[in-house]
Image 1 (cartoon, rainbow, N blue to C red):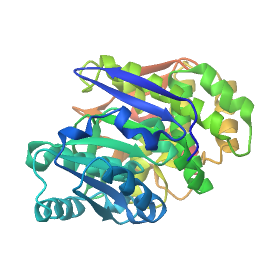
Image 2: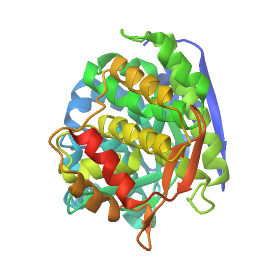
Image 3: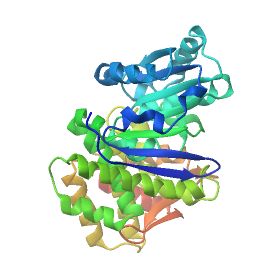
Length: 363
């Protein structure tokens, strides 16, 4: 991989850790972590990423440790399960990985979430680093320490907060992504633009259709990482409420994933539809003008993302929302918009209004 300039964002929370973004940063891992502290390195990845990058990454890791091994899991959201976690535990036991072992997750959100959860729970916690290979993982899921697995068809029902020692986001990984997976990541990028950064939304709006070049992607990843880092620093464990802004679009998004058994929509696609629901609710309660809804829908379509969920029953979504982690004592705290780039957390919305909007986007 060619060597270009990189940027390191340092997140300062309970402890500090770096997020390195650039092209070729995968070849400079020892700049971000002291590997001499570890007795072994375990690479956790999926079968697709292993085929594309496993050999090269493992070769790089072997320069830091004589004892390296690879645990690979199936591709897809269904692999994010306790069954795969059990298999990972058995693998670590069989390889005699002790508490000085280091886990490296190489892949998208599924690999990062599951690998992070394994690191958090095996022997009460191993150090780990994230090597995200998808746009969605680089801009969002790898940052913030959320780890976990799905349970009985419900997304991220079991998990913990557990921060990596470093996050290394190499833009070169994105070259191998299929177009649908790029669109998936752009759904989370839109979330940042709508809830936090009007200028970022403007960049996406002006960009139009077409593939993004490396320099554009690098700037987008850096910008999103900066935005999320600022929030993590003040609300690392979702205690004070600031981190809730990152749930924009996720209330309906997670409900869609649950109702469709994590099969019909990619995460970013479900979030895109969830954002449409949120902006429509925002308009109906007087927080947003109609023209903003049209702008949001137009940009989402430009980015190849859905804005409707035909064939889904609104009542099923309402039921799924009632089981959402963001619902407490029967009340759902919605993230709505006071304008583009101006998210507002913990908004209460009458159920009949929610149903009205869901009927609009489901037909």
